[in-house]
Length: 247
Image (tube, rainbow, N blue to C red; front, side, top):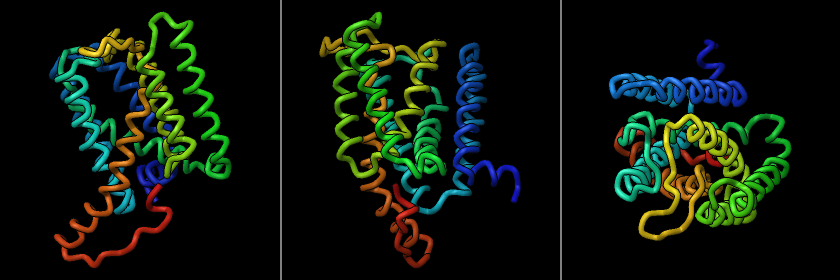
């Protein structure tokens, strides 16, 4: 087994790889021109493509749905609505594959041996983390975060009652780090109020990870149909997904 395969197949190694790529990539983007940003984007797409080689068919379909749905949400939320803005005022091309990597990292985090044996601990930590963050956003942080608190409440609901709470919890951990790091170094900035609504928002909002709940719902709903279409188009006989192929 090659080093690349070991990294991609091992949940712990994969999470560390995504963390390293995120920290280094966003740090480089802080000083990059548009041309440099395109190079970073090509590297991010390349890493996601390599990861795809070692995913199950269902995971590929789910991640593809997340990339498409999240990109549509980015266009609406950033480019059209202006809820947040990237450093160069554009939608960086590393963002779509980045969403795929965040989803996979959250999934793999929930699959690490230690946390897989303790899913309630992971979910409980996520509930405590997002609830505490929301409370701080309403009381002590520099910017009042009403919108984030609403998103946090939605996330807690799905952590308690959702179809894949461990995956949602893993994604929250990844998104929380990503949002705090990305806004701290200025890769993107959230507006003080949601345009047109006047609802106060944090930078970052505590409930930012709630969006991934809806991305995951879309993935769970649409991925089986996408996989079935692909198998029919490629002439492969359909095979039912196992419990390990879908979170």
